Every structure is written in structure tokens, then in C-alpha cells.
Amino acid sequence: MSLSRRTLLLGGALVLTGCTRQKVEAPPRLVLATGPDGAVFREIGAALARVLAEQLPDTEVVAQPTGASVENLTLLAAGKADLALSSLDAIERPESVRAVGRLYDSFMQIAVRKESPIQSLADLAGRRISLGPVGSGTEFTGRRLLQYLDGPSAVDERMAHAVASRRLAEGSLDALLALTGIPTDAVYNIKDQVRLINLQSEAVRLYREFRGPYIPATIPQSVYNPIPACHTFAVPNLLLAHGSLSADVVEVVTRTVFTETARIVEGHPEASRINVRTGIATGQVPLHDGALRWFQSVKR
Image 1: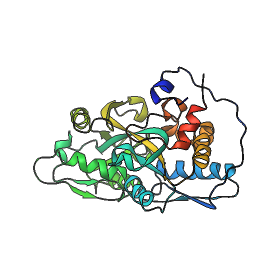
Image 2 (image 1 turned 90 degrees about the horizontal axis):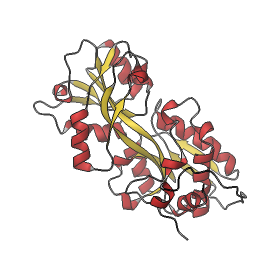
Image 3 (image 1 turned 90 degrees about the vertical axis):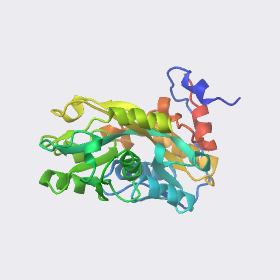
């Protein structure tokens, strides 16, 4: 009998059933589209590729650096990637892709210097800001946010979060936008020099306009102490699989993600929330048949 996501979610505590790992017919090469240098996507993707290579010993598993979500979706659609990481809001045609599972959530963070006159999103008008790398989830979501600005457009540039962090610290940038897990080094490394902009009203506005992808959220003070708690929004991140991948292969990928989590997220507290309970909560993106098969194999 097929189990719905609702049934699985209501099933209480889930533990893994014992199962015999059988050899599957996997392609000679699997490409996992990740993210830019220094990004959580890239580091988590590289760790997943290493662990997955152990599960598929006859397959070369490649973690391909990219600009992140938007570029990853392009590569997946073109058949140039077999697996890809993406923020949920960047997936504008959810029926066209298949999910392995939900991983962790990214938080929108807008950092400015402590002495900056910028107090709200509206104050970014005409300012020099970073929207992250080209093809990133930060760029995609940041551009949606900038549509709410009145007055002159922001002077937005594309760069890695690490570069933006250095430029903000030295004063050649007015604001850093980063849609990523918390804490992120881009903010943590300069936390004594910056503060975060509250996005409470923008979080509500985005939720009302786009619904599912945006979740009003708070970054606790403990994350970047002494920076006070900040109201913002979170976006789930998904691992996606090309529809042509066999269910057997995707089942192995899914099992690896959710049973080898400790090894995959080692050293990345922002990704430590990966777990089987929330793994099936992929919004409007349907699960790949292989992922669904694995989730059906878990029970109380």
C-alpha cells in the first residue's frame, strides 16, 4: 500500500528498518551540482559525493561547483547534472523536477555596518549591495526583495559571500545579502562590526504573495552574539534528482542522505537539521519514485 506524505508525517517518531543492501545498476558517472566556493551547498555537496561514492563503488560521483540554485536547475533541466541542490523558491516549475528530499532551511540575512544609517530594506535604495554569486538562490530571492524598494535602484553586484564579507568590513560595500544556513561565516567572522536588518514585514509580504517557499523566522541572538535576534524568513533547500535516474539509484541516494547525515554535515551546524522527519516535506515538488520507496521503508 502506498503511504501519503501526511501519513508518514503523522506516524510519530520514525526509525530506520533493517534492510539488505543490494547491488544496483548505477550509471558510470553521477554529477551533483553544488554551489560556489565557501558556500554550504558546495561543502555539503562535496561531502555527500564522497559518501555516495562508497555506496556506489562502480560509479564516479562528481561534485560540480556552480553558482548555486538557479544554475543547478538549469544544469539539471539540460541533463548536465543528475543530482542538484536548490532552494525551494527558485524552483518555479515544481512539476518539472523530482525531489530526493528536503535538507535544511536557509535564512535571508542582510548585514550592514554598525554605524550605517541603513535601518530597513527601504534604505537599500541607491546603496551598494551584494546579491551573492550569479545563479545563486541569494540572487534569485534578493531580486524579489528589491522589487519592494521605492526610489533609486540599489547598485547590486554579484560576488561570493566571503568576498562580500570582506568588502563590507572594509567599507566598500553597504550591505551583504546572504540566503544561507545559520550561522554563516560571512556574517559570523565580522559579527562585531555589523548588525542585521529586520525583515518582519517583508517576510509576511513574501509569504502572502508566494505562499509555500517563504517561512517567517527568527535568527536567535545566540547565533551571532552580540548581534540581537533578527526577524526574517527561511527557505527550505531540496536535493533534486533528474527524472531519468532509476528508482534503485535514487533510493540509494536517499538512504545515504538520511542515514549518513552525521558524516555529511560534519563541521556544518547550519545543515545539522537534516533528518527523516522533515525530509519528505518538499512542498509542491513531487518525490522521485526512488525517494518515495525509501521513505515508505521507514516506520516506527
